Image 1 (spheres, rainbow over the protein chains, first blue to last red):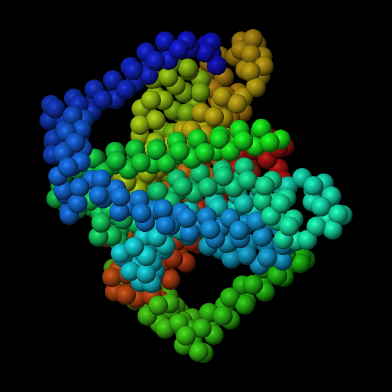
Image 2: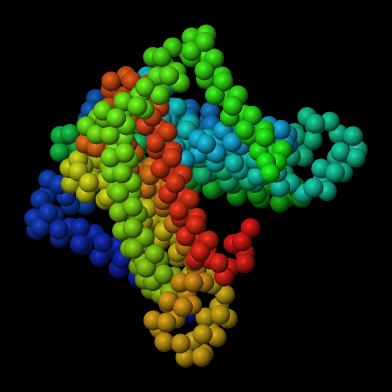
Length: 262
Length: 258
């Protein structure tokens, strides 16, 4: 903007400065007791706690076990959202009547925060595995649906006209034209869904769960174990980041493959 | 006046209401323990608006939640938008703040709730803190992207004409970035509601999320539905206000006009 782009070395230097200032202020605040250490452990405390939790259990399980149980629920919820959301979105993009019927329902539900489904989820499916899955579903479903719909709706009209003219059936038009044309949009939607689903999972586990990272954090909060709470946050952040990186890789792999095909 | 779409939409809503009545009241296929009937919903609604539930009337719960969202959202955009502008404007600031952001961003806002409760308790301050965290990130990122997407010639022209720095920000950069800034604000608003409801479900003494929480513990489906409808209406109304503000602020922008 007001200056030329920084060189690589300058970028790294400023980046390191930023992190050092951040960690420095944090460490100073807790190490000198400006904020009681019980409420703000130093970064080192959190790192130590993280390592400890890898092997020793808290709230009934070690950190990897909590993560595994969270991830299982998460995978079910997101898969369910994709399995229902993507086909429904494609069909809505193709059949106007379905679009006209589903859109008002969808618009009505859109403004209800996914997390507000928690009480009904607990009532209908219990707090074990079903309830959290429903919350994850509520968070991950809308992007799946919307992106598949947009993908199918804004397909080059000439392609569809050509197919129609040649007498292609509805099923084949959907499978062989709409679906492939909508893939980039669908994949982008899946990525957003994956992120929102992970976020909803954390929320669900904070409120109703007997295992999982969110549960661990609530237990730690009850025991005023700030370092454990922060460890949970770090673990959630790392897993969320990994999911995003994996999906990004998948997306660019798909794009490359399609590029070769074209 | 109402087109084909409108009629079908109206028909769908009527059909759903009829189905609701049919399943819960006429046939009893869905019992009141699972989902409330229209009559039960109405009873819960009159109870909470009259005698009150979970320590207050519906209006006061809703008002309290609305107040917290507005406060948290305001703090978030008052800090997030300027930071985004600054990061967009100054590459050194961007380079220094980006890594910290990379670390903090993957942590979902809801994961801050236990920490906020530890630090600030169950009161309003903890709610405002988590709303601030959740709404801050989208407003920074989108403002930053908005500044970066400004056409360079525009800025060069302004600086060639000797525009002072401050006016450059208020009259060139901020307006040019405003379409994306508003995108960020919309995401921030959504995030604010999600986080507030979650925070109130986890621990609160008043608010819509608290109503939901009490209703869940009392196994009171009618009241759960009242709470959910309230959340939806509040979210819808605030989005409407923001869109109106956006239309006014971006009246000059032809691309934003539909």
